[in-house]
Length: 208
Length: 208
Image (cartoon, rainbow over the protein chains, first blue to last red):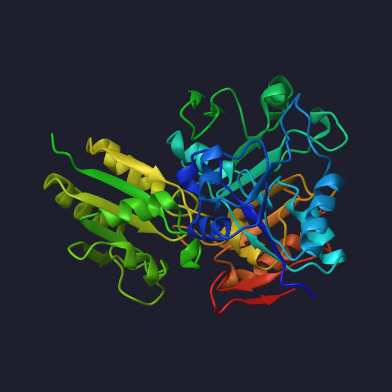
């Protein structure tokens, strides 16, 4: 029994000030921080000088650790009694593979805690001035990923019939998504839509 | 032209440590804070001593300001050049009526900014150990409100056909929601479900 503990932490969608107080607190005392490429580098400024920060990738076209490699790094450091922060963009349990890491930690009997982060699905529209729900207009919102584990084509996707839809990682499948949306009775040419690039960052671009 | 500015801020779902760094920063320098009953009182500890904190209600069975009264308070203080924080539980733009407040501020030419908060829809399942999406199992999640502006019966609700569904404010409509879910081909008696009360707080209760 070690006193190690793994924290699966959401860093929020881009703006480093959207980090939570709790995430800041665990970063300050972490021994090891495994972070994704999408995490804003300023989030790492909260780590103490002796912390080891390891980028585990997840950027298109750049070398990334596989999920198994990430598990293996966590397991090794946990066995040494280290306090480990697994820092992910957005929220760790929305399209963040946090569920897989939870399942791994559980299977190894490693103590862990999840610290939610602000999902891009909420914050990116907010920074673009778009409410996701609105009385009289929308009483449901769905987050959908346009990419899949095994590369299944997007046109096989069943669209959730929610009043508002937010697509993650959608740029490369824009044409297919538009075709899909036009097929449903709920959306048409008049339905307001926005495309947001690098949301909440200084490079944010919005096309409505 | 005054230098007033209104911040529509999400306080997160309960645990006051889920406040963002940005929310803390604007609270520290606010002149007026209008907060909902659901906001954890510790969030107000960040306000400076001279700030005026006003509870605008939104608790069942207690007196609440109407939406028009809230708008009117904001307008009055904005005209005096005050820095106003409108602090809401969860995220201001997910079932938080933030869209209505944005529309009001826009119509009055009052400068405002939205600071997203962690939605209960994300954090409450996380604290209960439930990932909302999972590769191979769920590639979409929908947030749905079980209450409506005009009291429309829940059984008139069209359920979003998402892989994971999260109902907000659902306790009083549990029976109707269960009946609705059973009618869809996507869910059956074997579908995992959880009921979470006071999520992320010290009084959290989970029934799976």
